[in-house]
Image 1 (cartoon, rainbow, N blue to C red):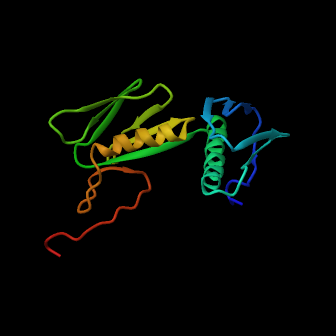
Image 2: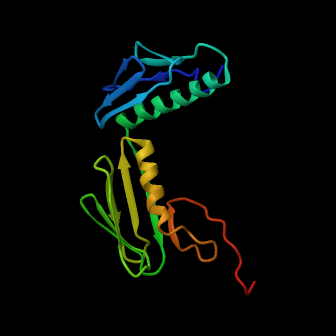
Length: 181
């Protein structure tokens, strides 16, 4: 039995789950998410918990069992609490600002990068004097927040010598010694 797949998912107050054939819909205070489930995996909702079962011990069913349990758990957590990622811009002259859903980044290129974000992702920029600018992304969809954060980070990855670039807050970079060492 899959250790992740066999764990039941507890439903918090105010979260509603509907199973329609092979489509699971989770609705909460922060929004609504849907996930299509592979045929074979059955989803049962009973007295405040969700359980997933698989028909056989085949490799595909074992893999999908834990996967869909994790996806549904992320959906339940997302519509009740939400997810957030913080990115830090490390470098002289690196700036970030936003007007609504447009994020403008100055990353040392000859032009500023303007990124239109999905309406589900809320963006906030924090620029304090003497500190690195921080971009905060929040949403109820974990996959979408991670994808947007990875896209922003890909514009200027942290380099190993000085650590300049866009990094996640709390990320530990592997640093290298320069020529003089």
